[in-house]
Length: 234
Ligand code: F6R
Image (tube, rainbow, N blue to C red; front, side, top):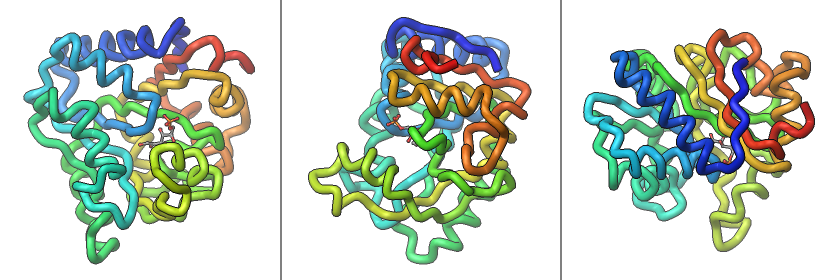
């Protein structure tokens, strides 16, 4: 894993754009895997500020809550719309449909989308428990798109976006670990001391399903963009 230490999340966003722009210039970016949450916001701001042309790029997102429609203010559809898609036109944007009537059909649809659009660069954040996407500890490294029960920790961490913790959905549809690992390049972003333990386990801990991000040690092209606080336990 290559580690790029940055001073601020804004610098991290600019570093991410530098890598994305290089791939675009070399015609190596047809499909960009995207994440939600606080961490990638500065990357999306930098993509917007630097007017990166994404019109030939398809995006696929990692996950979506079950039970929230694409119009729900806390849905990941809305998050992506507000943080990026309103300002930057892509060739197409794909996210799981958390509001699907038959989840099994939606999982198949999403697996087909990922199969048809091999991911060139996948953007990741990391959960304090080491989750990537919504692949919680214990998820099989062989997993594809699947339905997950969110852990109490993740629900608590995500409650900050909702009025009330009881409003946080308890399930999500997430891209699987096998599909994340199939991306040609992975950019892991992490800022702040809250992420330090997970980042240390990811980089130098044992590769175990109880620490989902540890599988990234087996990937040939991972770039970790992180600040000193997130790297402090290495
Ligand atoms: C979001 C996602 C999650 C987040 C992780 C960190 O699409 O897949 O794995 O990346 O929960 O979230 P933040 O960035 O809010 O700390």
